[in-house]
Length: 296
Image 1: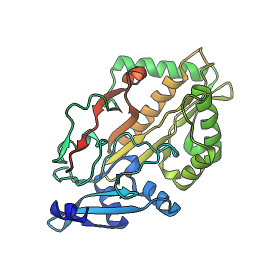
Image 2: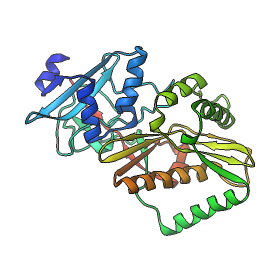
Image 3: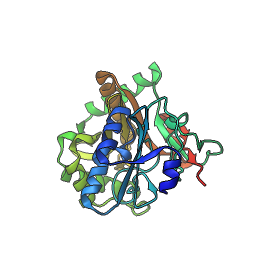
């Protein structure tokens, strides 16, 4: 492992170097320093950090967990997705990545020399569209306004306690999926959100006083960009007068775009992997393949 890294210019690093690179160049939620630090403090995983220098300056960095795992694979137990990975890297930097992965973000397509995005049709990520037609904006805003006037209410997650968020999430998730999809437990959700309140965004949609839809959106900030990520949300399927999941997604998109506009930062917003049975995601998103690193 060490020889391969040295061969391609990588040096052993530490968390502070990685953290500085992330805030300068950006990355995904699952590579954010605060997420990493949360799991470092739990001491359940072993982390190793690496950086690449050009003219004495760190221009790329990444980490592994549990020896050779590229990135952070905790999605089965915590609401931190593992669908695509963005590591901090200067826009004009080109490197050889000395570890295996099939989750490289399409945003790294021009940076990683030994990555291929060809024949990756079976593994795509849904990224929110950069713009919507005037007709769509008018329609979605009208639908949301109508629902709110009929007894609905939209409350930002940042105004709620982690415990309340966890209770609502688990309740609506189980209403939506029953036992067909495993739900995160309340303890893990509460623990993560308590430690990372500054990363929590998204909303809960209420109707006639009861929660009917929730999206647990996490936001990763850096100097020039914001990356939003949302795992499976929860919905009350008994609500048929309107589509709470669609209305909530629209509200989250509008909020994210407004934050990025106000802060003059680029936006990336992932709503997870694409599958034909999830065609509804194409209302909001475009698909991009994830790349695979080729390592001997």
